[in-house]
Length: 250
Image (cartoon, rainbow, N blue to C red; front, side, top):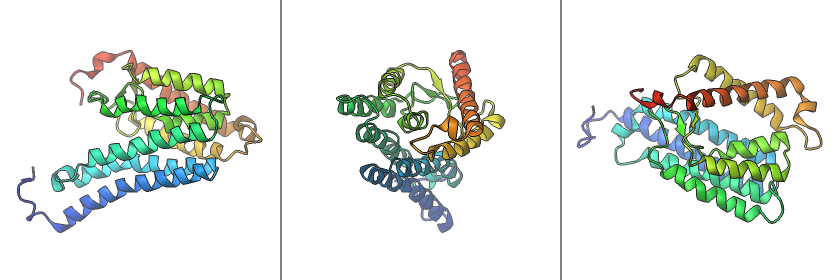
């Protein structure tokens, strides 16, 4: 363990690497801002692409941070707080703005729904027991960027969207388990390829014309996307019915 009281003896390359990881994490807020700009310009696809890049950064920055030992090398800078600030913006604020701006819910419900998303998500980010010892999330983990993405691909009705948002809001306070695809060790050899499959098929379905449907435009890609989505749903359900697994796991 590095002595946190004396960092003058640390190799400069270690310090530089740690700060580089922090900078990489911080890039997520820029990507989130660009997504917000795209929303204001009415470009829904560009907004999703920027959010996708932000999701990619968030997905790998934790691994980079652990390898660079940022908490030891730069103890004066809290990378976890930085990550939470950025995640709240990209996972909650920007998607809430999409719900409001793109009329994803019935007329008259836009403001209340967007505000509700932001309000309930505060509990997620303040919940000290949000992650289990085996790195699942306990309670809906404010993945509103993915929720609105599914609305876009499935072209669901505004009333359906409102119902789904309400259910997810309630599930925020229910300790069902949700997989972190890059950290959970259960079925990791399958989960990583499924994550790649989901990402690739999502990118293809994202750019389907609004005058067409994902199923009609690319049926094979669509069903592969459904299969990947179903896989994640199943492992979340399986984990939720065996809560005793929390005890004593790493």
